[in-house]
Structure formats: C-alpha cells, structure tokens
Image (cartoon, rainbow over all chains, first blue to last red; front, side, top):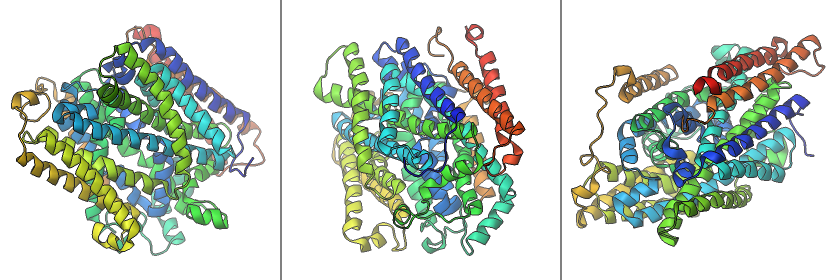
Length: 560
Length: 72
C-alpha cells in the first residue's frame, strides 16, 4: 500500500459497497426495459424534463469537474467559475430555446446524425470519427483522474481502481444502455451533492464566512486577487490565469461553451431522451439552474483551501520531485480535513459517482455514435434493429477497454485540464460552427459544411502544433506572449471556429444549396416550430430561460 | 416515467439515501457518546450526526413519496 490521506472505517466501506451494489442493481433491473435500439441508445425517448435535465448536468459532472476545477480554483481563484457561468449558462439556454427544436423535430439519434440530414454523409463521417476519438480519450482521462484520487486518498493501487470502476460502468451501461446511464446519473447527481456540500459548509464555518475566507486568502497570498471574477481581466498580466476578458467572453463564453453544450453529443444525447419537445427544451434550462450552483461544491472548496490549508500546494511535477501535495489533491485534502467516518465514505462515494457518471456519459455516447454513425453508415447499412442493439451493447465493452488503454496514455500528461481544453478546441469549436450555420442559414451547402468542418479541425490542430514547435507563435495565436495554456486554448478555439465559419460561407456561395423542401425540420425558416403561446407563463421554457438568465447576471455582478 | 411498470428512479434514490442516512447517523451517534481520539477539524460540531439525519429524512421522504404503489 502507498501513502494515503485517510483510512476508511467499516462504515465507509459499507457505504461505498452499497453504492456499487445499487448501480449494478439498476443496470440489471433496467435490462428488461431495454429491448430495442431506441430503448438502448435514447432511453426510449421517455424521460421527463427533470430526469433529462439532471442527467444533462450529471454527465458533465465527472472527474474533471470535481477534481480538475477544485484544483483550478486553488491555482486561479474564482476565475475558474467562468467555466460554470459564462462558460455554460448562455449556451445551455441557447440550446433549449434556439437549437433543441431542430434536434428534436428532425428525430435524429445523434449530432452526427443531424449533420447527415443537413449536410450529407461526409459531414457525418468527419464529426462521428472525431467525436468517437475524443470520447474514448475523455473517458480515459476520467479513469485516470479517479485512479489518482483513489491512490492519493486511500492508497489504492492505480490499476485496481481503473479496472474495477470501468468494468462496473461497462456492466450497467451494457445491460441498460442510456436508460441505465441516465438513472445512475440522476442517482450520482444526488450523491455528489450530498457528499461534497459539507466541505464548503464546514469550510466557511472554519474560515469565518465569505469575508473571513477572503481576508485569510489575502493574508496567505498577499498581492494576488483570487476572489473577483472580472476585475483582473483587463490585462493578461493582471490575473493568475494569464487571460484577457476577450478570451473569456469570445473564446470560452462563445465558442468553447456553445460548442460543448450545444453540439457535444455526450450532453445533447441526454436531452434527446426527453419524452416530448417541451421536456427537451425545459431539460437544459433545469440543468442550467443546477449548473449555476455547482461552483459552491467545486470552486468554493478550492478557494477555502487557499484560506485554511496550512501547507501550500504545488504543481504535479514539483510534488513528484520535492514531495508535498499537488493542486489536483485539493478536494481530497479538504475531504479528509472535515469528514470523519461515515461522511468520509459518502465523500469518497461522491467522487466515485462523479467519475462514473462522466465515464458512463462518454461510453453511452460513444456506443450510439459508433453504432449509428460509423458502423451503420460505413460498415453495415442494412441490418435488423436487434443486430444494432447487440452492436451497441458490445461496443460499450469495447469502448471501455479502449478507454482503459487511453487512461494509461493520459498518465504521461502533466496537466489534465489543459489537455482537455486542447481537445475541445480541436474538435468541438469547429463542429459548433458547422451545426450553427446548418441550423440557422439556409444557404449553407453540403460541401460548405464538410469543408468548413475539416478546415476548422485541421487549423486548430495546426495552431496547437505551431506553438509546440515555436513557442513564440503564442503571441500571434493568443494575442500575447503572457498568455497561459488555458488562454491559448480559448483563442485557438475562437480562430478555428472563425476559419470553419469562413470556409463554410465561401464554399457555400460557390456550390449549389439544397432545395428548401429538403431542409424542412432542419433549418430555421424552413421548420414549423410548435407554438407554446397557449401555455400559461410559468409553463413556458422562455420564461424559465429568462429567470435563469437573470440569476446568471446577478451572480456575475455579485462576484464582479 | 418511461415505462408504466417501472420503479421510479426517485424511489431508488430514496432507498439508497435512507440506508446512507441510517449508517451515517448511527456512526455520528456513536461518536457523540464516545468521541474518537483522532478527530477532524470542527468535529465538535458533530457534522456526521446532523448530516446523517438530514440524509435520512430526505431518503425517507423520497421512499414514501415515490413508492411503487403510489406512483402506479
């Protein structure tokens, strides 16, 4: 056994064991309700707005959210909250109000499936293959993060953690498909909150409330601003993240955020499982309400660690070379600080639940895209529904095994979060350009869609390689040589989106568009969207989107 | 709910939370009367006891509100 932060009591072990029994039990129970491809890949399109909304948020509340952003909060302060507020809320509301009708009315199984309907097989193939590649990598990152926590906190062998957790996820997704993944995600959402919420509550008690925490941070880290969202963003050099407000607003708030929340099939799949268009529109709005609150269990513990931990945390490489704890251990350290027997088991369960929900999200989305958009489109076009259902099940297992392989690859990377953001800018930012133009611009042609997507993706990878080979290129890509990795990712995403949009527009004007009759149900101006005017005000999605938008603005003003 | 015969997810959540509430409350009570030598920060507030009770109440409510007979 390696060194560990805590020792689990019998009560803690019982709590963790009950969790594993429950998630497997749910998978076994739901297998009887998973008889068709629609059941397995889209949960029978029968979910309520609340279940789809909670699942929508929980699928994103994985290892990177819990571990990575608590770590980022310790390094960058409250700036990390931008990834939850401006980096999520406007995009979620945009998905609900503007984009969801097209996804839902077109009855697509996936985002690449929508691209096939709108732009043809070429766009679908490019987006499906890049998505499948990104998904198994993300899944590997999740596994690695979880294994790292288990090693640090409990001293568990890293390989044991990877295999046990991933095979558990494989089992329940194999049995119940998306239905099982969604049920478990809702369960995991509750556990994450109940297991993690005690840390900020007790942390604020210890620090003497918000003002006491801020005073302690100033005392521990004099001259640095960790507690203002916008004040330090006027210059690259004035904030610990090394980013300018244009990078946050245009790179994160526009391209990366809208790209992820509106076109990443991992999250969109949850909403497509809703039982009707109204539920599908309400689900992201409900999700946005909870998303706004997540910083209280993820970012606040990182800030509290700056205030109350007696030691200063360091980077992973420094910790490995000189000893001490790294940034990535901030959440487990806070857990060990406040949680005794029983609560510790609940906190560990919350972490495991977060890892599993993220992993299950990746695996179920991968199974769908592989089966419908790669296997059925490119390998075996006409088979029975039962055949594709079986393919989905076995693909779940294969996806997990490939993810395990990638987890071992991820171990070689120093910074988990920067790596993920780089992946987003490679694939998600251009995809958002293609989907957005496809939905809102009738003139966009199939050739424009394909070439825009390819050009955006290749240019993003090219910019990344350029900076790796010649670091001075950073001043061109990120507009400043002071920009740090995250800022570089934001700007690279912005450029790749602009290149994608530009190429799509130019090629579209050079090629013949589809007749409007073929765009019905796919494009704004050609689609009859059901009116919701007959609903009373408090039942309308637009009303609740307005409420969420107001809350978002108030929070930004409070923590300005 | 997706299928009329299916047990509600909220009921399953209620079962697990009730079990967790019972375990954590029991441990909290035990520590209240027999405090351990090694404690966590703010252990004097007995967070395990009141957090366990909170989870127990939440779990029991979900079990009652979404029990299969009521939701049919």
